[in-house]
Image (cartoon, rainbow, N blue to C red; front, top):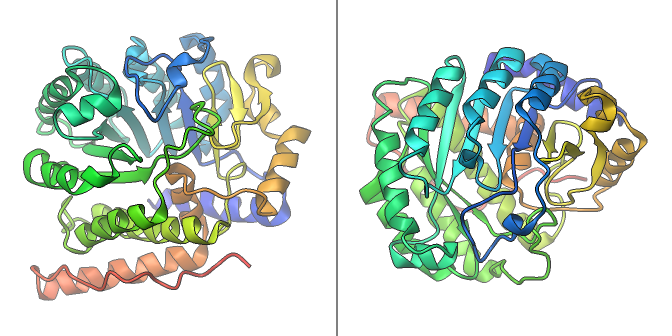
Length: 388
């Protein structure tokens, strides 16, 4: 974590000056729009494919260098790429990220565990987080995901991934649920199943958003705040009771504290409809589409340039006039969203939020030392520092 601090300082300075002094510390790589799910909350599988080759990723990661600390390999379904382990190896060799995050629908139960093991072997010095998507229990998951038998296959995949835990110290196995109008009323059942049956290292949830990237604008998939707020409060209750993860270790304790803040931010974002803390998308975080388009974020999904047209030089794309235009728009508050990926980077770079997390972690460490069973605390919404 300590090596992130100089990167944060550069991101803060870049945001203040309105121009990038360094490349982003958080990169999402969409490796393909291909997907074997047919989710009610996503139409990404209908988008045309023009995927980067492994050689193109090799050149891109070489140009990024050691700037990025957090890599997410997303899709579509990223494990459909047979060369996913080789992509990760290229990123690890050139960039040495501290965290590598990969979501999966778990459908390829005979393939995914072996492919993930190769990913773990390719990045031995990174924390590798695999999040299994779970949007319901049993047939209800299959209905949301649009694939008969998805739940059973996902459970077999999860068992295969859990078997890797004892062999790889750098492996975090999580479960991820997207809360939409199709499953918001089932959340308590999902939560209980994950907590009591799956027992992952982490359980995360985010609200279904209408995104340009996913071709879901106008689909009405986002639940109203009146229905979503109880979900957030249940998630925060689980954090306060330490129902997931080993909070005797400092890293999970920090992660849970930031997650708690994230849920606070989500509630306020949905109610107040504005940026609650400054958004550093386009400064601290970025996304690379499968065809090499570079975006500030996947919500707006506006290309600032294409890597193929810039000889795979990320810096060249990152400093285009279009990139500057979007950075100015974001800083001016012309957009807002509860996107989880960008929000965590925003919190790291927001001094009041990061300081409050540090205080919470310190208090929790002392409390755990004095009374190991005492994990509870108030679940009320904090008065987070706002963006003036």
